[in-house]
Amino acid sequence: MERWASYPSLDGRSVFVTGGGSGIGAAIVAGFCAQGSKVAFVDIDRPASEATVREIAEKGHRRPLFLECDLRDIAWLRRSIAAAAEAHGPITVLVNNAARDDRHGIEEVTPEYWRERLALNLDHQFFAAQAVFPMMKEAGGGAIVNMGSVSWMIGQGNMPGYTTAKSAITGLTRALARDMGPHGIRVTSVAPGWIMTERQIRMWLTPEGEKELLARQCLKRKLVPEDIARVVLFLASDDAAAMTNQTYIVDGGWV
Image (cartoon, rainbow, N blue to C red):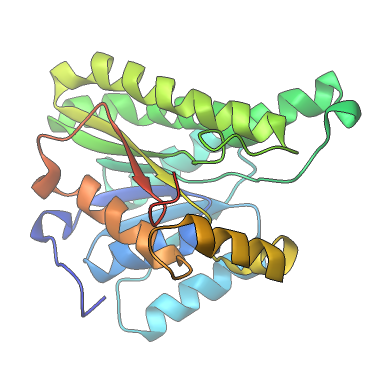
């Protein structure tokens, strides 16, 4: 992070990140730790999360607090948020990052699978925001950053549950921004393009897909998790004090 911007307003802030164990989430956690924030994050993948904690600590940054949590269990999520606030003080930055973009065809989707897709990709974002709302009101303000996706904007197929959930995050962001704004709470969302996380490279990237991606993007390079993390840091900081109720696309000019 030494090459990039420093935000004094993030130093010492109590930050909560969902899905922070790997990929974009791990880059977000690392970015806030480098800023001096007190970071707690939840993830279901304990080995990956513990490795992320070690890597951050080895760099000499503030050590994040990892809390194992299955976000489909809202009671568990609420307990995790309460534990984070007890450890670090009232949460004034929330990053709703967790999601899974597993592919699924129309014919194979059952009602149970559909509900699980929404639970994994949408429901927890609202309930995490609901849980931190009283803390942010009492603190006089805060920032919530929701993670969307350009997948629904480009009409990507083979995962209707995921794209439906991600499109709904735009509406959720605007609704929360309107209701929370009078309390000094800003709510924005970030819509990443195709970010080259380890999971994406391992499961979905093909030579043909990479060729198409670089042909469609304005920027002729693959995007990495830090590209998203740097935007999240800015939106959470006081430098973005007048920014709310909007979705910011970070896709290298794909859409």
